[in-house]
Image 1 (tube, rainbow over the protein chains, first blue to last red):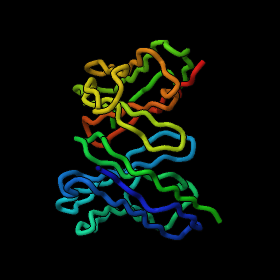
Image 2: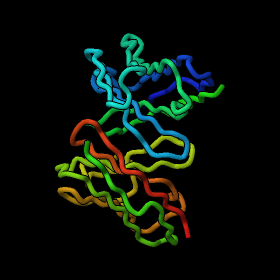
Image 3: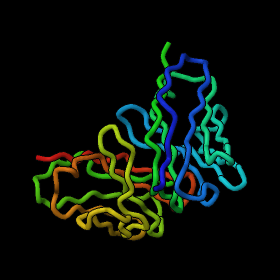
Image 4: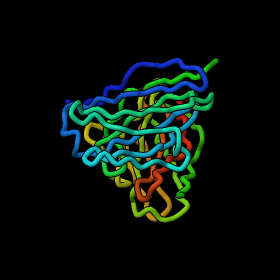
Length: 117
Length: 107
């Protein structure tokens, strides 16, 4: 069956970096783009951007340009999100999502990143 | 960016009641609209895409309608398991944008 399995929760200090992984299974990884969505505690959903899983080209929403990097390990059907120079406002659950035409039939379980000194 | 104004922010309904949630887009989105349900501590689940198409496995009491800038999600006969947050999302243009959400509770 189709699954997106994300890496576990992270506790980081301001200024540190974090890398979240999203491993896909049950479908051809390169057939669908992988998107990333942020959800701050108690808040709504915010689209961060997407990566073309065939070419590796990332596209970032304006609020996520600079410190955020989408990457692939295509041979492992895995997409990654790296956030550098972490700030308190990066505390959130980050979801990978895929399998739709800019809508998302499948979501990872979410990765909670907590930034605290 | 396309703004998605979702209403109401919260709603309580009795079991068996029919409820509606609305989303208003700041410009026409040509039926490129999805609805998601998110239960507490879980990831969102797709209910409806292309404004009115029911995702496989979603109960038929969920339905979507609308056109142009106005869209709605209807739950015909509230069930206990429908208590959740609901979000709309436009898939018409980048950046993709979500509504602010509706918290649906059982009365």
